[in-house]
Amino acid sequence: MKHVEVSVVMPAFNAERFIGEQIESILAQDYQDYELLIGDDQSEDDTMRVVRGFSESPRLRILENEEHLGAGTTRNRLNRLARGKYLTPCDADDLMLPGNLSRLHAYLEQRPEAGMAYASFLMLEAIGDDCLDRPPWIRGKHHHESWDFVEFVANHAGSMMRRDLVMAVGGYDEDIPILDSVSLTLKLAEVARLEWLEGEVLYAYRRHPWSSSAHHPDWYPTFQKLVADAMERRSSQLMAGSQSS
Image (cartoon, rainbow, N blue to C red; front, side):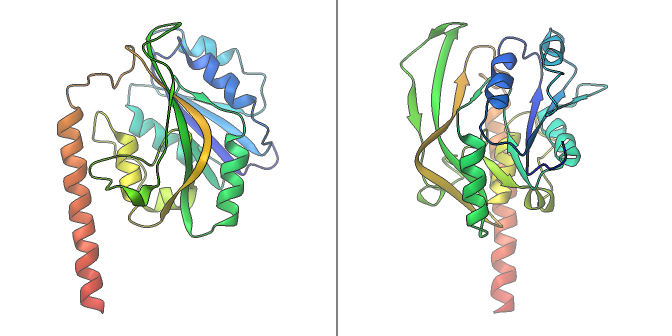
């Protein structure tokens, strides 16, 4: 591809069940100037067989880790390879809804003060391959209407971010087993505005029993660490600001 404005980046680990549907939803976008980078983190199932089934697409670039590195490290590797001005992180078990890339790209192009744009998402809570636990529901909220230490309203998956800002804040934390997406959005919120496209639903998040984050034993201690790190950063910023004024 000659010109890439947006890099869609997606880590994958044992994702054969859903990744084909996610790739199809991304390649069906009406926006044209994008690439799709998929990083396989040493999957033990047929994830790579499914991914290679899309190898004829000129948008697709594949990274295969030589060892299992975790989602945060894999995302950072993909971000370094990305050619786009913007990054759209995705999860292998979700769905990108029509208009996602075109709407978010247009929004950020018109608002240079925004570092990240996200829309509402459709929540799909599954108890089986084709069985939902409850009717789908929509979630979305302005970032400034919540405290990000308590409620993560800036949807990471399916959002769009300025690549230079992501690299400037150090990308994703690599020393945590879960919540790598939260680690990044907390840092981005400290340097830029996170903007919600109110009234638009552009992504479908799938919660299911096979998710690596479902009932993860390290969820709470990792959350405590991220909050403590963010509080230290923000306190330092406040101190520096008061001393310079």
